[in-house]
Amino acid sequence: MCGSILIVLYGLVVSFGAVAGTCTQGDDGRFYVSMVYGSFLFLLIMVTLWRGRENTVFIWINPIIALLVSMSVTYFWTPFVIETTIEGHHFCGKVFDSYMGEPYYLDRGIPMFHIAFSLAIFMFSCWKLMRVKKVSLW
Image 1 (cartoon, helix red, strand yellow):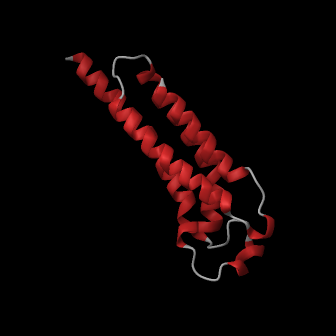
Image 2 (cartoon, one colour):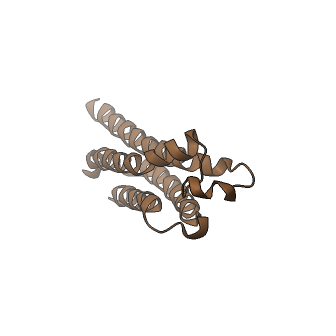
Image 3 (tube, rainbow, N blue to C red):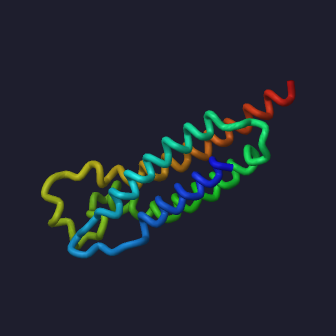
């Protein structure tokens, strides 16, 4: 149960980091905040799934919730992957490229980290489910 709640919270925090807020004068703080909170929740989810009980019904629900969260995160962060990671623009758009005095490699990695973390949560929850099924068969 706790893992499912944390996965939904992760999806909300990371997805809102992409769409909530404004880029007033090139302020990209919301992207960094979503990265900090998303990384913390990612680690917390991994520990919770690793140490979670294996005989609950929520072990079957976790992969479904993780798939929906992964689809949501991918939907909201894919345009940023194209603009920031591939094209090399500022998060707030091409207009703010002059604000990038030095190469912002962390800026370029944030969308990829979010997508990779959400896929890792999905794959880990599926692995945990397969492990439980394998143990219960024997």
